[in-house]
Length: 238
Image (cartoon, rainbow, N blue to C red):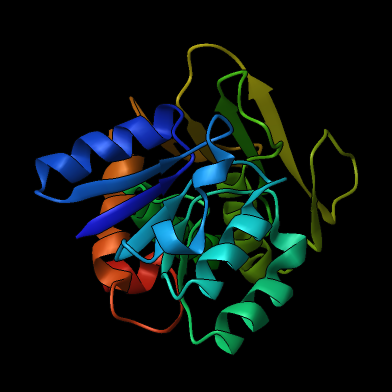
């Protein structure tokens, strides 16, 4: 598999390491130092692109890949206000896209656990639910895309909660997401159900970037030759 890496920071380098270990080739490495190499001609030499950049560049990066006929694995977060436009652009170009707020296999299993627990807890009104997420100080978006996914799963199943907020709240209909930025912290996500009798918590702690990078390479292997929009649940067959 011939890969274009769009974004060659710490995550891009971690993806490169795992891709090479699995026998794939990195044909193109793109970042802010070589925008002139981001061409249709160069993209056409690849089988798939893996995009981990920023909320400000992700949308245009995806459009360039679709126009070049290159399927994409996108791990950038914070751009989902443009989701409908990207879906249309992907479909108009018969493109392929895997998008996930988090590519870690462990986190995606955690998503399933979070949904199941929320369904159980909805029957027990004595518990108050909240979320906490901790990342390194270079994390550009707050709350994290993973925290938003977790919050949306809770909102879909806890009927007393109507929307999430990124601050402390006394409103019973608001789901708190408390964000902290501390170094070093690859990523910690906690969902807590608290009552006067006891607490129930589920926590996912990432020790390094290998889980995210490995999942992104797995998603790239999945999307090659496919058209349409996919997520990690489909990649993992959950």
